Image 1 (cartoon, one colour):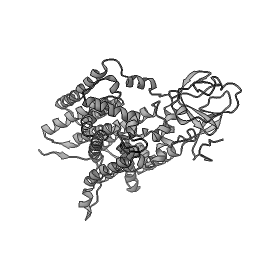
Image 2 (cartoon, rainbow, N blue to C red):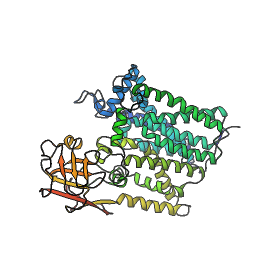
Image 3 (tube, rainbow, N blue to C red):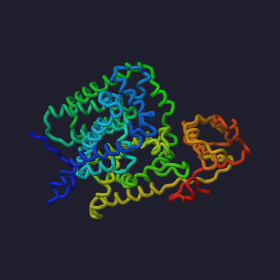
Image 4 (cartoon, helix red, strand yellow):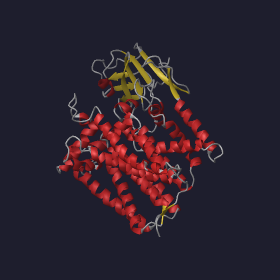
Length: 516
């Protein structure tokens, strides 16, 4: 029996004389997207070998230098622990290409990852009732629609491989659940591939284990409810997972043994803070200003995320049947992953764009734009279609979220403060942002980076609480030109700020001015 594809929602595609050209759009995108990223790669000021002030380019950055060192070491058979900071998944991808190019070993494999992610996205979007041509345009825009996004896809980041694996996992899952009567050999191969992807993801980025767990639980429930998971399927999944996880994990243990690596210890020391998830999510997604003097929220830099948030809220009214189940799976993965990284201690607004930490969300952005399209399509269909009211309510909710503001207000000496400004000599960026500074308040010791961030201010220093507010007078240590304990009771030039909820755009007078 030939394989057939059953969709709960028919993809919307144009008819008439433009149909043939419209069907060519996915092919054009698959060709133009790598070309656009190559141009971004060449034009990136940090591209290695530009013979400018920094000829090493991004290989002088910490993350990229470790990718390159690990890839070169694997190619040479060098398993010294000091040469392999990160899990070796991304290094394994680049190792063969270090033999072809010393400066650009990740250019070709990264482009291949983008194309593979595109194919996985198209398969998943089609199962949600979005045609391949529309889906390919959505993916193109989510990847290359803005300069900051093009940069983090063109530059070497292990999240490029991660995005390919995640969308491969989702695309193959959607294909498996949508196809009826597929050949046994093809079905077996698909399940082995799913298991292999799931098994390799934790060795690329350990945090992706969360996505594997959500996928396994969600896709397993869907497949069992549809009677699309047989014992043979489960065996093929397990086989694929063993084939990928065992060799990659064995390599990791051959390098580091059973002791935690420096990367694991460092990540554990920073960790995740769930107690202030709402505060961190607001700063990253909505607006870091005026708390942080620099940076912008994701909704401001990528305004198309506003309807995407609406679509994420409204998808139960936008799709039905299998499309609803798959949308629920994707929504759970995006929400849980975003919550995880919004709670990540080392992810703060300045780093989101200054240090390209937006790359953490690369895989999720195409999923978000897919939800946004579902919402826009429902609204365009008019009030006569089912789900229109839900789409309107979700749109209003998304706009309210985008207009939400946590506004600074002066706090008394005894009141908790989420920011403290101290007049004095204006520090340099590295001295404040990366400095090892200790503050002590009435509740105990606070360490920079882990508990708060220090930043240059127009008139001195700015200390922003991340884990909990500052309480009582502050004492300071760790700043070379500032005597220990200089911030104490009665010290002049200190302004303390608490936060209040508002729903308006902040009044802005000067780049670093906070609300009075």
